[in-house]
Amino acid sequence: MSGIDTLPPLRAVIANHGLSARKSLGQNFLLDLNLTAKIARQAGDVAECDVLEIGPGPGGLTRGLLAEGARHVLAIEKDARCLPALAEIAAAYPGRLTVVEGDALEIDPLAHLRAPIRVAANLPYNVGTELLVRWLTPPTWPPFWQSLTLMFQREVADRIVAQPGSKAYGRLAVLSQWRSDARIAMSLPPEAFTPPPKVSSAVVHLTALPAPRFPADADVLSRVVAKAFNQRRKMLRAALKGVAPDIEDKLIAAGLKPTDRAEQIPLEGFCALARLVADA
Image 1 (spheres, rainbow, N blue to C red):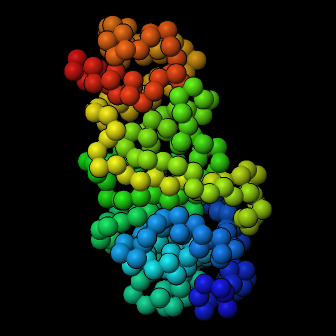
Image 2: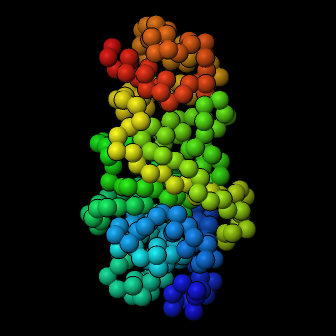
Image 3: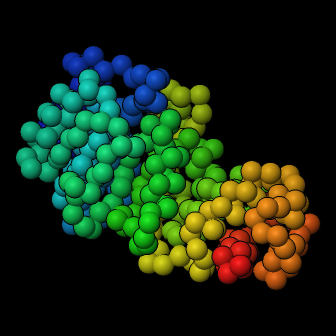
C-alpha cells in the first residue's frame, strides 16, 4: 500500500506489468508517489477541474492528481503496456479517470473534458516542446486550459522563463510570456527518475492570461519572432530582411535599433514590430 491511496507502490506496479521505460517513447518514470503528489499540488486547486495528462506511464502523477481531488482526469497514453496499470487506477477511483490510448499530437482531448480544464503532465521529452507551442498558439484566445503544469528538461524550462539578454531567451520565451504568466515551480535531479536521464528536469507552471500581454496578430508575431531568432547572431535589419521591404524603417518606428540582435528585444518590442508589419 502506498502513502497516498490503497494501490501498490509504483515499483511493484512496474514489476507486475513489466513496464521498463522505453527511450524511443521519451519515457522516464517518477516512482516516488510523494514527489508525484507534490507535482500534482503545483497545478493548484483541481477539485472543481478536469485535468488533461499526457504520457501517464504507470500512473504516478495520475494518482497524485486524483488523490488531490481532481474532478476528472483524462490520461492520453501511447504505450499500450501501461493500460492495465492505468485500468487499476480507474477502478480505484470510479468515474474519475478516463484513459485514451493514442498519440497526444493526434487526439482532440476536448471531446472528453469539460471546463474548467487544467493540464498537468510529465511530458515525454520527444514531444514536450511541440505540445507546449500548440497549447500557446490556438486559433482563439483564451485557450481551453486555465493552467499548464509541465515537466521539461531543465534547459527547456529555462528557455520558457528566460528574460531578454540571456542566451536562453528566444521564441519559446516570447510565445510563453506573451499569453501567460510562466514560472519554474520545482527542480528535479536525474536520480528522481527511472531510468535517470542525463539532464536535470524542472516543473514549469503557466497560467493563461485573459488576453495577450501586448496587442499583436498571433501569426505575424510568431513569424517575426521565428525569423529573428533563426539567425540570432545577425543584426535585426539582416535577420528580418524579407519580412517587409522597409524593415529598417519599421524597426525604428517600433522603437528598436536595427543593429540590435533578437536576444536584446523585449516582448513589448516584438509586439510593436509585429503590429507595424501587420499594418503594412
